[in-house]
Image (cartoon, rainbow, N blue to C red; front, side, top):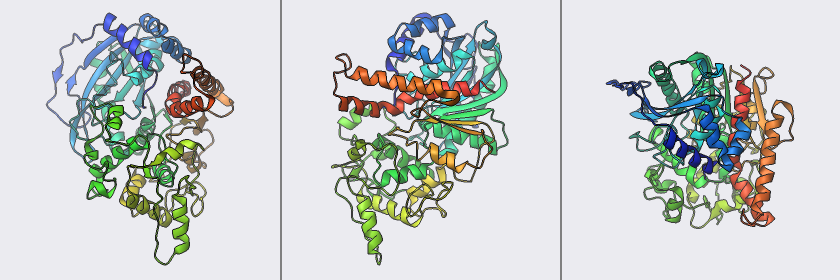
Length: 537
């Protein structure tokens, strides 16, 4: 659901385990400080070391690895993989230990040692509480393998947190899409990595002062929030390239509540409500204020989990797709029967939302069913707030130029939390060149409600400061080759699904799988676009 290129990682981990050895020979010192940004142990543990030739041979040994090489190019550098443990704070300001990766390019080539730029990277949503992006020997660590091949093996120092609530963090929840906390954690691991780098076994590679920020999906929001936080603090960002992130959170969730139910919404919902309940304390008094009685019990501690998400769903702890009740709730606004009827109709199935949704797909119908996750009273309270405080990207009552946030902060507490973490909040605009990559057929993080909303919001900025790449658009401009590659890959996958090896699916079934996998399929192509973008600076 949230993974990509699984066969690649399996082969990658196998060769590392067989060939690399692991631990640092340096003696590590434990820190007694828990101040955020402080390393728990310095120098950090080196998990693995791989030279460029072995890296390339390993990737070429599998079909998916060979396909990734076609996107990334052959490794120029070897990579040393370090496991960072550092201190940060949670969504309510709690002190917690967190962890992540420091990937250091190595080798004799000029691009592989000496002063090198840093890529600070935010990963996509994970449901596995033990996730550790630094552990490249783990066969399931596909995103770690991707960024190692895409950035570290091409001469960039990579720094990437696991996020609070994962791996060694004792935080009992994940501060999901909490812009302040997650940007702060990114800055904390950057501080920790810069402290660690001179003491590693890869100390011939150093920080040259250039800082690039990237990330995908949840990590796209994290990357943009981090760019904002650093710039507001007076720090210099060289360039940023977030991918397919939910930047305009209020606009996105407005679309969902009016019926454009995105894929994986039943997973995102408990992560979001728990995150904001922990941060603000006012999302609900009881879990049944938000969730149907079928699923309410224990949902606030359900994710992230040691149990696989497929097992959670098959065990009946979450519905797979039914976010809302298939029986349309009735909206009753005293003294306004016309608006009551309009809102009730807009909540029907199939949905006729006030809000344009991207893409137009019958998969939206799967968001309704019985049993369902979100209770009707909560959904009605949300859409009533939209009616009172419409977002500028909503087509109700009328879309506003520039797609601003609601003119007044929302009254409904969950929508207010989205408003606070929407990256339009505060009217910040980037100083550093910024590329937003995504695809207009994404059924998970809608291109129209996020990338295009931010593009409109920043339309008055100097030309060229903010660029947008739509992977599904007709190939043109500096990223035409990336667009062609993505579209060719989609066509090849579609054809494969119709072969015996791919399941022998019908055209309709193959098309449905393409839509379901679209969001994760974008990731490596947005990563290569980010690297090409960064190479200009």
